[in-house]
Amino acid sequence: MRNTYLKEEAASYEMYAPVVSLPLHSIKQNDEWNLVKIALRIVALLVILFAAELAFATEKNLVAIPVLKEQLAKGTIVKMEHIGSREMNPRSIAKTAIWNKQEIIGLEATRTLRPGNPIYQGYVRVVPDVHRSQNVSMDYRVEGIQLSTLGRALEDGNIGASIRVMNNSSQKIVIGTVIAKNKVRVE
Image 1 (cartoon, one colour):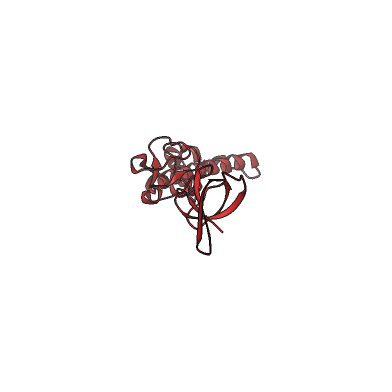
Image 2: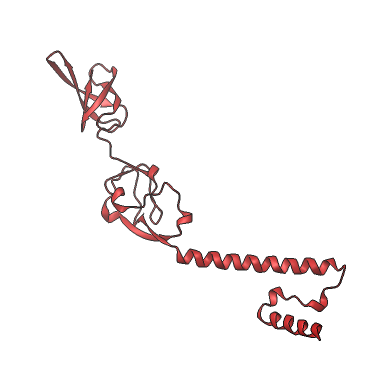
């Protein structure tokens, strides 16, 4: 009687989950092949359940992240009209991504940026006050005497940064401190 009940119960489970049907009458003692098949069916069901849970969790936990609407070339200043938004799974976004639109506006692209992708910290930078290969005013002060000449910046720099500058008239390379846009103090 009990064995008949178990067979009926097993048959009802086969109707709902044919992938994992466990017909008890087919399990024989020392029948390892049947046990392996049952184990494989259970593993398949667990994989399906895990994939379904992952898909459900992905749809449920999407976050909005700023992305570009259009491609930007290296050296382009990012403006508000360049930035859009895209819903993404936070697990697929690197930690260095910029999550706030306001942090991106006014920065310069350090590489070509493609639309629809998150913007990472290494892809943008603060616009330098002095650009490499740009002509700059070189100021030199000594005990009340101030000399000014033109030079060419050999590297980028912001106010307070020390950069190499080549004097246009003597072709000598000196180190100066950026004191304003396109202006370097040499000491």
